[in-house]
Length: 468
Length: 115
Image (tube, rainbow over all chains, first blue to last red; front, side, top):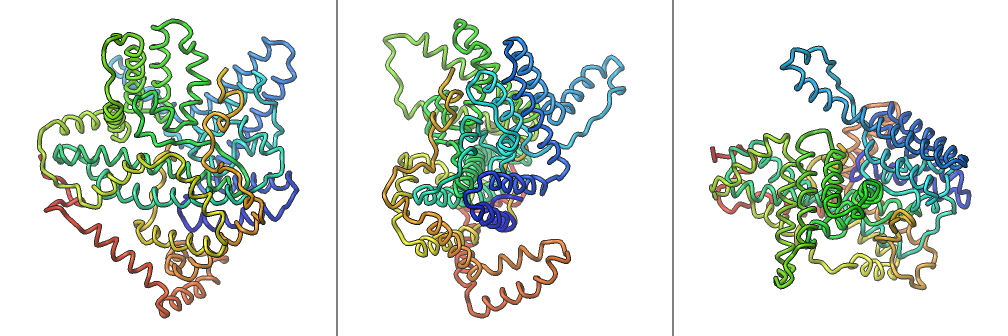
């Protein structure tokens, strides 16, 4: 059940009516939301609803045991067990097949490869998101950052349908306190939520879908048959497509949760206006980058153990961040590129000659954007071989256009231009919208949704981040 | 310990739905929200009935859907007869014109020819 579909629209209307009709009964409201979330998840594969519940139950039991343990060593042991169990779930579903393939490739020359089993594991949608959420919850309970939650609250935290399948990774510290009180709503929040949903719908159904079909998919399908010009705009197009696709999901998730009375944190902040890669990661998929910072980079030692360990920690964090996206060498290379460049940036900031004039900010933005686009080629290509073939053809020097249409070019330009929009424009618009009569806003919303619907292609492709 | 881990992400990066307070915020907010959603839904039910019928046609037949199939198709036909689907069709036609525009001889739907 994808957000920009009629099926989801009807589902949400029912959930909206039921949850708000439960009035001040917070427990029944949460039960209704939990059942709705399981129904939503079960629409993909009902078998994995059990996985979701078992995962929440085990993490709840471990957190209770951590809270009761007076002994620091026992608490550490329990949190280690919990992290290992969560990583075990992720490892089995996401990486077992990949690692067995690599092992087979290593052992085949020695004559043992054929004895290894071939593992085809169905990946539960959103498993990377809810396992990371569970890990951060256990660590936060162990460090007394958040109190242990009730079974209902924790299960709802991990299952809540707006963020369940593609994030943002909403932490217990953000959502659990909201679950403990009856949600309240105000016109400003509602106006911002409706604008976010509409904007997300436009980005996904119009910009991302059009660019995918008309520019990016043909460019990446067989890059050796395309010109350098086509591939250059194919890569730019993918940069816009993935931003409009993933940020659209986040926007809609934040908006939908807000209409139910819950606040999610920001997940994107105009990432292509970043003037360094470090800045980019403060603006792109913020909930993942801050998760990696708080639960991986800092525990590895962060920048506290000298420059060499800092560079290594940056590199390792991004390498593992790349592997989080999927079990393939393309994602490893993507993570290594980001980690390596972050380390170079850190080295340069420490060793930059004092008298050297600073480059203008626009140079930093251009350079960062192109490093990110280079990474996206590995991220989008079917494999590392295809990515290198894409790069080879990109520099072949054939500048004919066989692919880029005026509409594709305009959408790439629009996707980049929205990064120049003043910060806070959505809130400013919401602040105006809330003063108007509801029928006027309802009609306007209807007209704008109708326009978006008229421009969308037949059918909607799944969000890119569903596969993670 | 970082801010994000101590207090949650909202304290660190904010949320796009948090708008500075205004006295109008508390004026019947639930009724306002529900009216907005209801009006938008009704508008789309009238002016985009074709999309509802198309979506319904793709649903697998079941004892729950079959009794609704004919009324939904009839509603879509009625709105079309009254010309209520014209605004959507006009936007769609313009969009398809934009999709068909070319700089020269580029053919995004076909294999490239660089090889």
